[in-house]
Length: 89
Image (tube, rainbow, N blue to C red; front, side):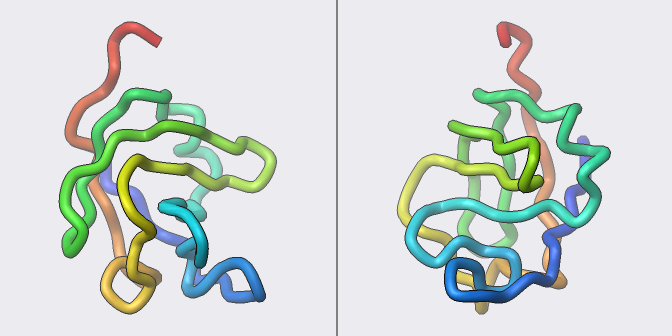
């Protein structure tokens, strides 16, 4: 299991590392980003399990399925866990 910290970043699009309009987050450590793949399953303490659907390497951001995340519940300084690594991608 891999623990991932969410970056504490806020601007017009992001709130405490959580995207305001879609289910996405910014990783604190961009080095870990290379270990994630589309299809991996991650777990948010409050929002539960989500599957990775898109990765933006340059911005250290990851999109997951489902409704937008709640920055008050899942945002920085929160962490998530990768539960399942997709072996196909």
